[in-house]
Image (tube, rainbow, N blue to C red; front, side, top):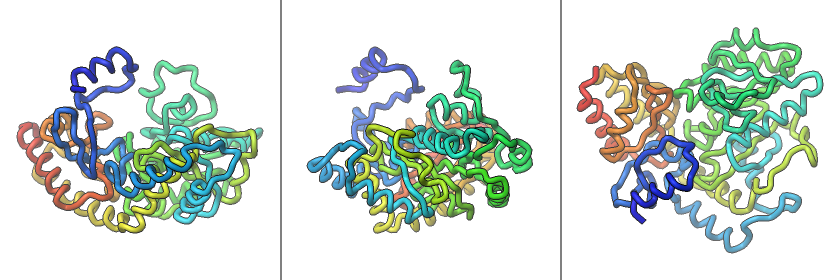
Length: 395
């Protein structure tokens, strides 16, 4: 089917909930994607960081194929091996506790919110979040999200959320009331423009939570699974949360989400208080186990660290060359390039030259290649970006 026919069907039958790019994907392999016209693209923003191992990683493909011949789905009132092993794997890389499996990042954050409220109610049920954050599209997680543009038109929003400036400990401290039960943060804000939480800020928030008996929830839906050079970004920043939410790269493209609750609160949600039909299915867990296996056996944390440093250095070179770049920031392979002007023209021009990136907050280029990326691929991407910035004539 050609691109025009695909787009025609979309316009007729699919709800227009996304700003569309005129690219009809046909297949992907590693760090590359091909469209229906046979054009090849270097993908440096694979599926909003979902394809952390690149497209169709062989270990994940093999695991899904094998599991699909054995057991695709089983109800969650039964046991199955893959879910047990995956829970153990997550805990072993994070901190002691127990895991709930779901299907997406929004569901993981929704579950973490429910857990916090269940743990604190009836006296405490309010959660503090930060400006610029993004936690999902459900009615609760969009309320927790610290960006008004995502909330408009969905009022009345549920009560129980207070939003304060990011990286401002005094603001969080001031916002705590006798009804506060938790603080929900992204260690690195993705949709918010690759804004990294300060280590001292996080340590102060951790101490506040300990002193006030609050839960510290880290949303690592985008930062998790090796992107920052550690399995989870909280390890880069030296602060351990009470609840950790995951999704995106956890299944390397297969839908799966999870949240891990520390031992002291691990049994808060009892039978009948929370659930999901598809969460933690054998097929999803097989994909996630293969993802962990690839990261571990192929030493991809090391690669993410080394290639992240290399990519960061190359972006700094571009900053020195192009006055249009205000700042380069991020950790590992989660990097942002803040421009002094709107960045859509850079996104569009890179697309035409075969490079896929993202532009968020109107002027921040999100550059987040898969953790399998190599120097030659980074060099190719930087050459394209350099050319786009040079050709633009914008200073």
